[in-house]
Length: 268
Ligand SMILES: NC(=O)c1ccc[n+]([C@@H]2O[C@H](COP(=O)([O-])OP(=O)(O)OC[C@H]3O[C@@H](n4cnc5c(N)ncnc54)[C@H](OP(=O)(O)O)[C@@H]3O)[C@@H](O)[C@H]2O)c1
Figure 1: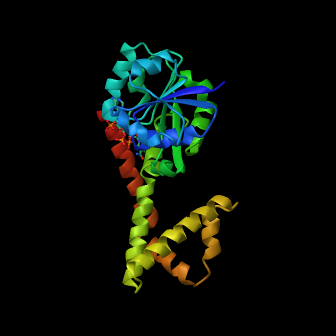
Figure 2: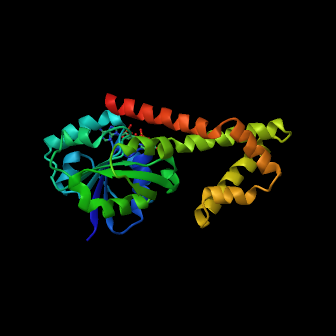
Figure 3: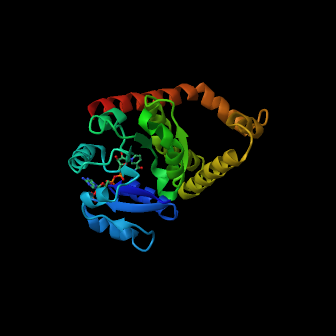
């Protein structure tokens, strides 16, 4: 039987999820956004029911409700769902950064709750989503993974505390990658290339390397060794990376992101 999924807040992330799920026949989508005209962009692309009032969504007894507004708007939405007497079987799934399961539990102590942290490549169905659930949602884990596999890959965390580290790696990760592309492009320009040439070389190389890594049976270090001829150009560059203590630079950056994630969670 098709699962009913409501999405509250259909901006960048909400619409990425809707687009991923909309092509699957096993889901019936109910979309609700503060400014309802935003939903018109999805018309003709996917099948969904446009919800004008949250009460109408709840009357239909959703299997899942995905909360995809900004974190600061989530308490108001949860209050409204409480007033409207949300069914206690509905799984509440929050994708709001830093909004903890415990905070949702304060509103809905009887419901299964999941916290999911996708990242921006969700826009092209290439998200990396970390999933954490409360004990009541244990039996829905496989279904939750399937839902989010429609927008990319998933990792199920052992505990919610690991969400900070996942955020530091996958949530913020695309920005690290863009920063490295920027640095490589500028370095290429310094060595005599036009910036756009250097950028193309950097982007396509990173893209090809990521695809190779995904398709290959070899680990990142094995692939690195494979392209590093003794005394060759790659070895020269890698030695320079090591002299600059690249592992410590990356580790300190991830530690900073983790620390900030913990601070933000406390302030919700
Ligand atoms: N974007 C990402 O890559 C990403 C990655 C991981 C997690 N997230 C999380 O995803 C959530 C959404 O982020 P976003 O980038 O998609 O933000 P966004 O583009 O601003 O979308 C948020 C949407 O929520 C709607 N909204 C606000 N209050 C509402 C309410 N009370 N009822 C119904 N809809 C409401 C807004 O409607 P209006 O059109 O009226 O403004 C807007 O369309 C955030 O909590 C963020 O932490 C995002």
